[in-house]
Length: 285
Image 1 (tube, rainbow, N blue to C red):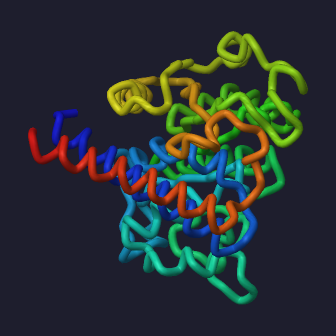
Image 2: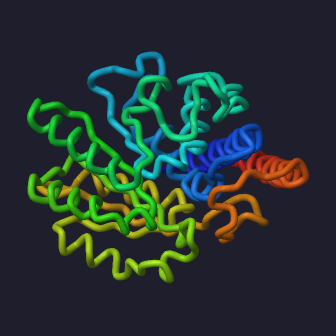
């Protein structure tokens, strides 16, 4: 990845974060923390990795993406809007009655959503089914699924891991957004997952550990995942909950709470200042 491409991705990720804040503030509810922590990976997926067409969302040969931690859909909606699946203004009606964008992904109502999700653990099983279907059909598309680290406390996640490794689903890539927090507190205090990498290895996965906010590491991880044969891959991404909004960072209270008017202004001003700096960096390359 060259410097200009990386700088452009950083700018796009910042815009995704602005749309997250815009959406959750407009809804007066939602989940900003885990959406912000995953914004860089959402951005890389849709602007670098995935073979998708916003003008043909149901294209049969597209790569599939499942957001298993479905409550963090404001981040997914933001990147889908920037990619051109629907107008950015849709974020302003997030969670409103009759709106396209609801509090969890809806594959029947939202272009670009490959699987409805929200009940934790279930999305990853659906992704396994998609990957298995691709194998049976000799199709070339790949399947990606994002989980939260708190979500990995669900037994269904490990049932899916057994299934995907047993069937050698090398067209399947798990992404674990490890921001360290869940609704009840720190993941390590609620039900510690470590050593998470060794757990996945014992199930038969190729394991790649990265800083989920470093685009160089994100790029290297997805490039490597494409080379893995005869087993699924998991990218374990260490992230910061609320990344990009200083008062939200690593604060469990921002798991599922909307900012008030003052907090909204603080967040948007901070993100816009970051965007100016990022655009200046790009101009100098």
